Length: 505
Image (cartoon, rainbow, N blue to C red):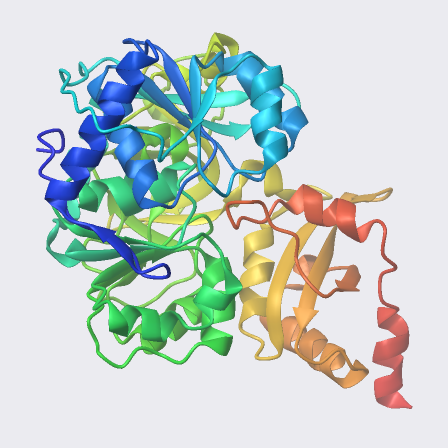
């Protein structure tokens, strides 16, 4: 399974292009021959500064058949960032496509990396032995493109362990016709949304990532292609629920949402829109091959931050976040007690590329420190409370920004929100909030304030508010709270006291 090339069909519903299995095998064989002409050998690394296309997947399989390692990177990186990653990974070759910016190609050339067009294959075909299980298969950079790059290395063994864990936990039937709206340069979109179903023989439909014009017609896209499964992130749903008509064909059998835990309110909205109750938070960490936990059967009551059970993984919640010493069973949290989430899985990364120092800070005797705060309930289900670094310490009281976000998301006139820590001379930290509102008049702000007062304890109420046009997000659709805080530092906060006083005048 997975490496016998019994792949499904590939399609690009936006462009209308598609390849069946026979065409895919031919495309891979021509790329194997081309790589051989360029001297690609086992252990070499290949940069792929493009993705979300038929050709991307053919390049990936050709690289693997030669025992080499693929390094997908964000095509939107600056030349400086490209050169930084080249210096870290030292690729032998790079493959580009017709959309690759000229400055990216120039940066690769200046860094001494030969690059060629993905369609430049020639007609010669060649076969090659499959990669060995412990060969490096992927390097996925999660940070450091402007400084010290942090590249997650997965071998074929760890990837296969992830896919087999998913097959055993949730099966492959619901993935018959899978849609990927996510970028293929990081774990969620590539390893699980795309490769798990496609290498299991299921059909894969790929679109350019995070295109508003595509998400605005998501319902029709699902119907026209009879999609049975899609994965997503909250940013997709904030737009789709507002602007796209729901699908009518009722073909969806399962929907995942990752990158940030869903509030119960958003969860139920997605269920209503998609027409299936099989909607769940898919908890994924790049270092563990993405989806590592969720609900195998999602037909249950929605709860804020609920994840579920491990998928090919053991989950522990501990009182310690020190990876430099072995975990002590005495430090394990009781059911319902919040602590640090640790994972043990055969899908764990090999390590951070040439950064053993970072690996030692994250892995303790096979256990991976996620950086997430969570709790396991009496039924053995994980629920997330937030990130350790997001935790706000207000005079010794611990506040999780996700708790505040979940309340604001329920307010019908709020379209996006991000809560973050502020420096405070008295308490050490206080709470700030940036919110996007459909109507920014004073009455809406007063209504939101009243809503929050009725749903949040006093110590969780933000002390400074910013009403902005858009919440900044990363290329993966995630919120970086520090980045939002930095953006707000250049904008005047609203005069909340004046607005609230206007209620009584």
